[in-house]
Amino acid sequence: MNSFINKSTEKYILALDQGTTSSRAIVFDKRGEIMGLAQQEYPQIYPQTGWVEHDPFEILGSQVGVIAEALIKAKTNSRNIEAIGITNQRETTIVWNKETGLPVYNGICWQCRRTASYCDKLKEEGYQDLIYDKTGLVLDAYFSATKIKWILDNVEGARSLAEEGKLLFGTVDTFLMWNLSKGQIHATDYTNASRTMLFNIHTLKWDEELLKLFDIPASMLPSVHPSSYHYGYCDETIIGDRIPICGVVGDQQSALFGQLCTEKGSVKNTYGTGCFLLMNTGQDAIKSNHGLITTLGASLDDKPSYILEGSVFVGGAVIKWLRDEMRLIKNASDTETYANKVSSTDGVYIVPAFVGLGAPYWNSNVRGLICGITRGTKKEHVIRASLEAIAYQVYDILKAMENDLGEKIHTLNVDGGASQNNFLLQFQSDILDAKISRPKVVEVTALGACYLAGLKTGYWKDIEDIKKNKEIEREFTPKMDAQTKEEILKGWHEAISMCQHK
Image (cartoon, rainbow, N blue to C red; front, side, top):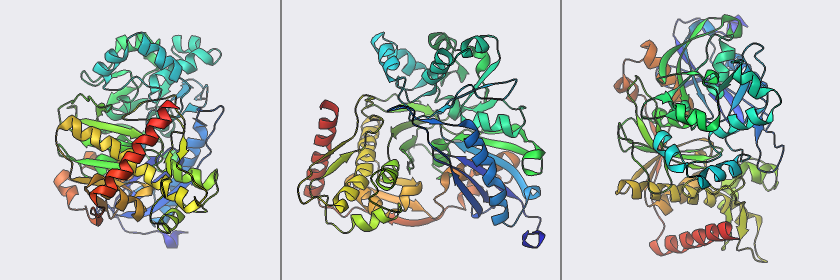
């Protein structure tokens, strides 16, 4: 095997990208180019309608499992890795016993809606404004706090163990670092902490009033640091060497940083399992009046960086639904071919509210809808309508963002798996009446964690040094006439209305 290893002394950054449906490891060089990539899917668990779980050890095993493969593909080894950066699905909640390291329950995924009725109860009791003022978040089952409470209240013995100081909580980044360091690191960064509904984004501390509200012992919580920070070391028994972990960041903030949206007003959308539209608002925590949330961005120091964010719960996941449940396609890439076989959806709309609607509607109780079907409806229409549904949901969030800012957004930077779909991006450009910019390296989520780790070690001198790496692969500009755009958007909003009032 040694004959395949690059014997050079060039150093690399290893990015661990732990996502909702798969784990990736990517080796990047100084130009920000991918030298080696490995990916492994892991099972999704659906115990009840609207419930989504992950086995924490499936997450860990898949993430550790792809590291060696990525190094081999990069023709390098662990000795040439300068640092590790971690980016992860946010809000997913894991609680484990700090003495045994064993989770007390499956990880409850960010998509899970089991605590929606409890959130409704808190809204009725008037806690929504308190939570928004402290955390920048809407009171929703999406975030971690109610998931932690559910585990403590529903897993036998969990609450008593937590009160004895024997249980730890972490989002996925925290669970990975705990295990990679053999229990030496129990920490997270500002971006992940800001998604728990327990972290005060203005004081940058866990909030005692919120901990009391949700009845969560403070002893469970990790320490919180900037995204670019020396967290500790990956144990040498994991991948062969003792490597510093110097970048930790939630996946969407990581993508914003990877797109180099480091200036106030810059915007990106990630077309992943969900869609996540983020705008950098600098050191201004802008309060949204249109259903967006205010949260923390990736940081190089203790000074907060704020963002406006809107989340679509089901983005690229609708393509997976077409493949796995509806069996209308064999591969995700087939959607572009089928969508282009028809000139329109012929009036068919799909609202993929499989787990409710995210921003700007925030309705946990609705479910998906297909409307406009006629005898002439073909699978091509359904597939095209599914792709258009992704773009429509992004449109709604971008318009909410423009309304909060009071100005039009002219360029949208994009990334994520579905951003490879040219039909989707052209349609997105058409209905937004904005330029869509797709980078050459679309793995910007992993790239953001890579940059944050490398900046901490001095692998890159500063952000200006990194900006030399950015290359645009393709830009999409609007081509649709105004009347057509107006008509199809009207149809979409009628479908949304039907979905919420059926």
